[in-house]
Image (cartoon, rainbow, N blue to C red):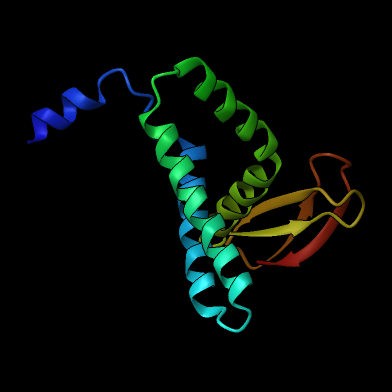
Length: 136
């Protein structure tokens, strides 16, 4: 069975970020449609949009046109790069908060990372050389 699936998927584009987002968004929209009951037409329309998103995601996964799917995925990645960068930066900052305190320079607003547990120290901004005292 596993070999048949592997043979079937050979030459197919496979799963990429855009396909994942389309399928997950489609499932979320379908779940939302399950809770919208009152206007039946609206509920059915929302459900249809969700199903179409899931189907389009699967069409992308099983497609044999690699160039077109790659170009679509690259365009999607370019459009969402700012959002992904913002969330990636926030995720990194949250990881750093365990071991470091992050201060903003009062002069230039540069973020400065200082190890925790050093007590009251004088911090010099590496960018504008402003000195300020903070407790870590």
